[in-house]
Amino acid sequence: MTKLWGGRFSKQTNALVEELSNSIHFDYKLAKYDCIGSLTHIEILKKAKLLTVTEHGQLKKALKEILKTVESGKFKIDESFEDIHSYIQHLVEKKAGKAALKLHTCRSRNDQVVFDTKLYCLENILVTEKCLLAFSESLKKLGDKNKDIFIPGYTHLQHAIPVAITDYLDAYCKMAEADETKLLNAYNNITLTMGSGALAGTFINAKHYDSKKTSECDKGVEAATNSLETVSSRDFVIECLSVLSIIGMHLSRLSEDMILWASQEFDFVDIDDAFCTGSSLMPQKKNPDVFELIRGQTGRLYGNLVNVLVMMKGLPLSYNRDMQHDKEPLFDSFKIVQDALEVLTALFKNIKFKKANIQKQLDDECLYATDIADYLVQNKVAFKDAHGIVGKLVQLKLQSKTNIVDMDAKTLAEIHPLLKPNVIKKIINPETSVKAKKSIKRT
Ligand code: ARG
Image 1 (cartoon, rainbow, N blue to C red):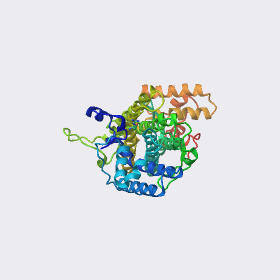
Image 2: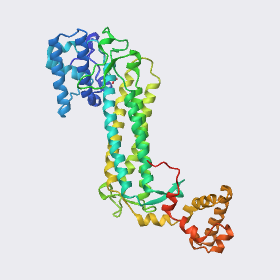
Image 3: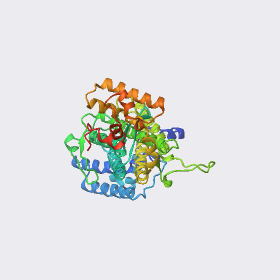
Image 4: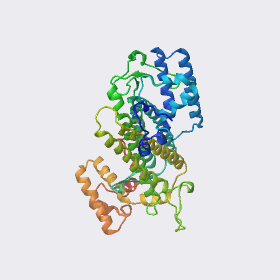
């Protein structure tokens, strides 16, 4: 196998160096984008009159054939090649003969790898966006099915104020919506360019690079506006990894909620058996492993982001081989997030709420303390006074071990004349509590 750069070397590469530097075992994932990049590149070469019509035709045919094999899933790599770019060059040589010797005209892998990785990101951003949409759709459906369920809302993991399960699930839908916007921003921030060469540009006129849309690549290609920046920036990778980390953080928080809710202490949800696992020792166990795995993987997502940030921070302009290490974390993070969204979408179709258990928690009258204070405020008591009055009421309840709803008119009136048994009974209700919150513009 010949190297793309063998000419000035008199010795074979040391086997250990090959092992250290080869990347084909992971960058084979760029095969499709490398073919698309080369198909775009030969259009530019033709425009610049660097290929004859025949040579262009031969290269196009060869590249299309390779692309077809990649897309059919039958593409096999030869791991003795350094990287996917060298291997595809070799395949084109086999298919197109001498014309293939012109394929790398005015091109460097430094530019090629940026182009390929950008195309990979563009495609995977859209795949991830679709997964996000399906995920929030399944949360929405679950909310719609359980419109009549209210749960205690928590702050500090302590009972706070009741909330509707639909609003709770909608909180995660809102996060998904915002993440979708972040993904689209990352998509729009990617400009596909060619013409950077190794670092300094090429002799082909910029006009030949501009707006080269091909049937394989609908985001137009432009001439780079700064070749040094193009070959040495991995901001687009870091931006994708950042958004993927944020999505992971949201999924991890949702997972943590579900792990708590599936515990015997909460016992709010029943996760379908098909989405749980057991214990090899304890026969009774049904564990929420899916959620734990997703929570755990978030560390890997952050690790991948920090990995690339640290890898980049000390690099002088322009291209440095260190950058080869951007791809494994990038591929890993996209896969983690897409897989997590897919399994959660399926899981949430089958999760059931245990209404009776939730009700037991809703019976905690302290959940309505703020509502009682709100009632006093709406009847002209200053908030600070209302806070103190309800504090006393809670204290009395705890000390006398009497439910507020069971307190007689006299006892209540001694705390404040506005507190009456019928009023209290109306206030202590989760639905009333939720409906009383009018500040939210529910969409
Ligand atoms: N595999 C390299 C990367 O991923 C691209 C090849 C550039 N190699 C070179 N010696 N300039 O960044």
